[in-house]
Each structure stands twice: as structure tokens, then as C-alpha cells.
Length: 86
Image 1 (tube, one colour):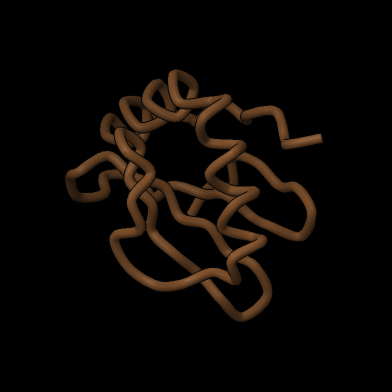
Image 2 (tube, rainbow, N blue to C red; image 1 turned 30 degrees about the vertical axis):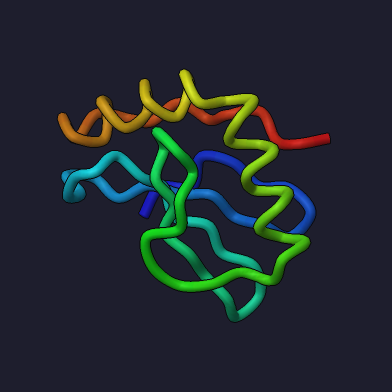
């Protein structure tokens, strides 16, 4: 699973050829979640509240970049790293 960003111990990644709806995977320690790109709803899994808040904040800033990477992933093309949250 290609990593597209990393910040504050959180790893953001996408699978190639993954299923709809467009989403990304977030991992923090032993916790992980799958998060929709369009509305940032958690589709599966859990993250601690603070980590989830940081992920949503980052995703709101980079929604267009996430959608571009999703389209690349669907076509099994190399993903573009996205700037971490600072």
C-alpha cells in the first residue's frame, strides 16, 4: 500500500485498484481507519479522537490532491506524495 503522507505518527496510504467509494487509509499506532474523500466519513475502523481530528484537518486541506491520487491509484499509476500537516 503506497504511503502518500506522514505526520505526527500518522501514516496515510492508498491501495492500487481499490474499491469505491474513493477513500484513503490512515494508521496511527495499532489503530487504523478507512476514510472517504468526499465527506471524510469513517467507513471502517477507528482512530483516537485527536489523531482522527488531525487526519480530517489534513484531508480538508488536500481534498483535491487526494482525489487526484485516487484516480492514479485506480489506474495503477505512481501516486504523488502529499504535503504533511505542520
